[in-house]
Amino acid sequence: MTVVSHITLADGRRIDTSTGRVVEEGASPAPVTRVTPTAPDVVLPEPEAPFEPAQRRTIEDLPETGPRANVVALAVALQLFGLEEDEIALQMRTDREAVRGLLTSKSVADFRSAVVDGVSRRYEPRVRSILNEASVDAAHTLAENARRGKPGDRIKAASSILDRTGHTAVNTVEHKMGGGLIIEVVQCASRVPDVELEGV
Image (cartoon, rainbow, N blue to C red):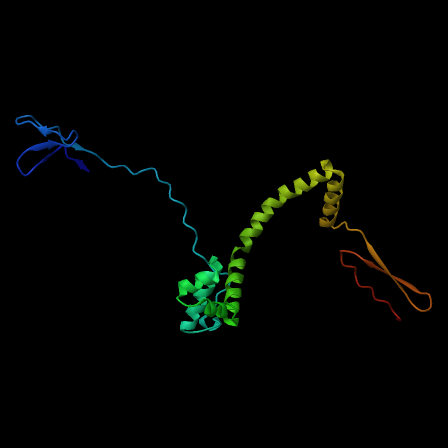
């Protein structure tokens, strides 16, 4: 880029661009300075990967077809965006009753369910990953609370740890039959193997 040190007016006078003053006749103007532009230190965010749905669908999967499909999609998008019925009506250039009827229709319910399910399934692995990372800290917090918490909190934390590690208390249920026979059913978290009795 070239920076000009003076400009010449229509009447012939020269103006110094750095001071705004008239350059006297015979005075040599300041030399022209060449400036090489440098790129500013701008850090651009990493582009997000394009959205890939968890499940591919076809046009036949739409609850409505033609122009009504566009109306259903717009209503669901505006509702999921967080707009109220009257705001959706304003945006869609209709009245609130029409929007209420549309939002309570089976077509909108089916479309909304499919969209929410698709987004949920798309981000589920990411959420699970975040929760798995946080679970280590949560386990440490629970263990610390079992060791050093208030007495009531220690019991809750200890019980929670035992439940999560499969060390639950055994529940028994007694059934009395007519002849005095008592059958005790043991309920526990793990699966009890099937037992085959011969001759029964």
